[in-house]
Length: 605
Image 1 (tube, rainbow, N blue to C red):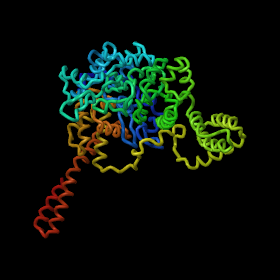
Image 2: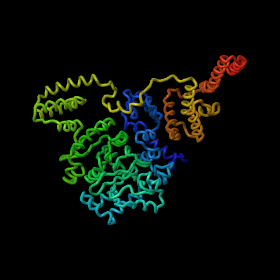
Image 3: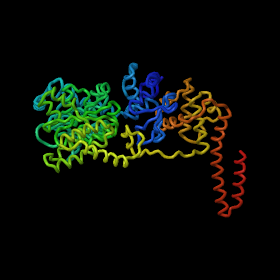
Image 4: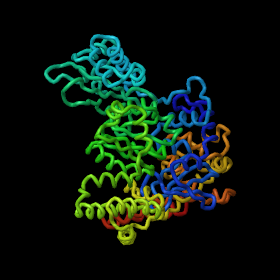
């Protein structure tokens, strides 16, 4: 049977859920501890110091009491990795060796026709540029440049590198002949509108072209490097329906398998750096495409890796950029090491100058963030002078003092002592005093070893629980029992139907009636996969966390149903009382008396 979401069948979804234990799925991203029948941890979706993120193995769901997010294993992967539903199912099926029947391989649907046309246009454009580079006079100069950078045919094909000729309408004509809507192509970032007249011209001209792919390998943008002098050196596609640079990592489509296998990722800044690092044998390499690292990108990395090796340029700007990304990566819960390139070279130049073996050694011997911070700091001081030594020590000690491991602190303090020819004991004493003052200032987070989670996404703070109105509590209790028992759902269906007062509750009830009508057994995780509505999934997660006894009787259901049906009448009575008071205030006592009798009749009901 089809789910209505593309061509992914219920059978595949159920197989994925059956083989994706919620605890195993969540544990790859969140440190969980057992508390009775639940597992608890710090929520990966908002900032908190007291764990309110709860996993229920028995029901195969997660729920956060702080931010309200909840769902099954598929929903968790969607939230943490930014997948669509079909992408999450497909990825999890592949991870669990679940065969996708013919025609169920694509993360699809409902398809957006404009998006599909853009995907097709980008794919054809990448092939055109690649062909022009390798097979025409136009591409000769660009090919000579790439050869001078040490790139052979194999690597040029691997990364689908191409060339956009220095002409105004190469791509315009190419796309026109294939009947693409040029206005759509301009909106999608392939063409530019002419300023002086109507019509369009090529966005990229006289540039070596690097296609940018999404994680599924579809071309979604380009980066064009100018040949010779000129600005900008690199021109990137604008953001479009397909391309969001803050959520994209260059080469992730080729690197993701290796990243997941090694649980490690090598991070570069540019396209050439990625290609050189790949050539050196690191197939877990990606780049931020010269833009600042974003929280979305770090979350994406965390979903696949435990460690990031930052391999940025060795010049002043590169070192400063590496310093900036350290807190971002560590705040996402990743271990971080930094490769230090000598001679101020970028990874691409270093690889070309010193070769693969020496380059590999630099990446493999990447230093800890503490070591890197000390190296970076040292460059700002003249250590031959006493004043330089003292000021360096004063700036270095806070970096060492925050380390939780006394062994690590000792190693760095001894290095500092030897380097500056200062007493180890005096440095240790100053470090301990600094630690004491820092500990007093520190917030009392309850996850000291994983403090990275205590400061994320400030907006989702936990509020005190509010007492629900009687009808609201009754509706939640009914739905909780219905989720656990088909007979209870049938009884509620016969005696209340969809007459729930809260719209979301009425929608959930309707979905439950339809679910049980297909003779499916009570299974909260499986039921949630039939909803495909974020708000309803969150509501079901919250309701399923209620500690209702699983056994029920008609009396319990009738009491709740009565409370639900009573609310509209109570609301009507309150409205009538208001009308009566208005009538009395205006002196219309006949009208007030008439309303009073209506109120009495309603109260009798």
